[in-house]
Amino acid sequence: MYDNVDPAVLPLGIFFFFCSLVGVVGNSIMIICSIVTKRLRSPCHFLISATCLIDALHISGQFPFCFQLFTGLTASQSQCFFILSIPVIGLTAGGPLILAMGIDRFVAVKFPTSYRYYQQAPVRYIVIQLIFPILYTIAFLIYGYTERDTDESNQITCANPLALNGRAFQVYNYTSGLLYVVIFFLYFKVYFSLKSNKTSSRFKKVFRSIGVTVCFVLFGWMTTTIANASSYAVTDDLNVAHLIQMYAGIAVNFAAASNVFVFYSINSEYRESINAMLGIGKKSGVSHTETSTTQEAAAPHSSGRSKSISVLSLPKFLSSSKISQRRMTLV
Image (cartoon, rainbow, N blue to C red; front, side, top):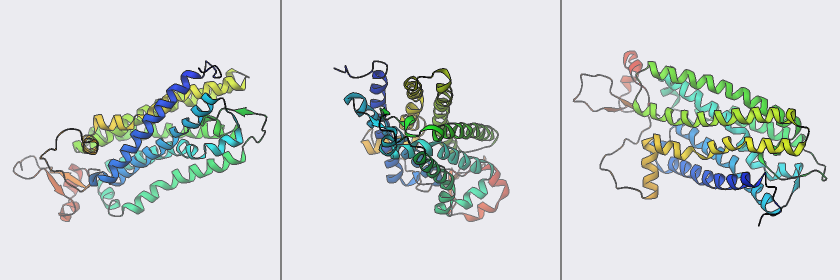
């Protein structure tokens, strides 16, 4: 049936097709949850949704790969760059957006009062957070365009790692590796800060969901970066080097497709939103606060009081340094 397909690539094509299908649908569900659920519209959740969108764009690049693989069609590297221009945006913006989420969590943990202030101007805060991801992505789109191989005799099967050619791919590989080293230490710092602070359970669940997905991504990019960097060193055959790079992308694509499963299993808010959207389970009689800046009451002796207090309705509490240290904004 697939006589024209290289047996070494066939398992890769089957995996990428189903992984991409699940990933695009799953990440779309995550984005829709943030649109329809008011309590999932904070700057933090916007960054989560942006990451899901970028992941969906990234893994959508496997559809052209699978189409060419199973039909036997090929294209020049220059043509592949244009075919995969949208997935290249997802490929390059993923790391910077994960870094932006890490910075957001770091500020929320270390500077809670300042973070609450930033949330009063969410658009400006989000724009500032997106400056680096946008500039980083534009830089590699331009660099990838200038490094295109326009030789029509060099025909390839379009795959995400091959969209960036030559030096553009090498520079991307090394800079993304550096980014993920920074990301590792940043999330490590946030994790230990959470261990030593009395933060709310909701905040911890949000970070735990992000942390698990980041662990998947870090593992995937670690294996991919090592494989990409060593592929040209272990063989002089360009096709074998390309094959190594494509197989190394399995972990990254798995991570990009797993967002909805991680957040559904760990974060109750996303789970409730997804269940409501899909009509799963019965409606609960428990009402949830609509604001994303809700805080838990800190005084242990005030058991008769409500356990959640709206920051917007009680602005005087924001000026109390003791309460600020014992409370954490929930986002």
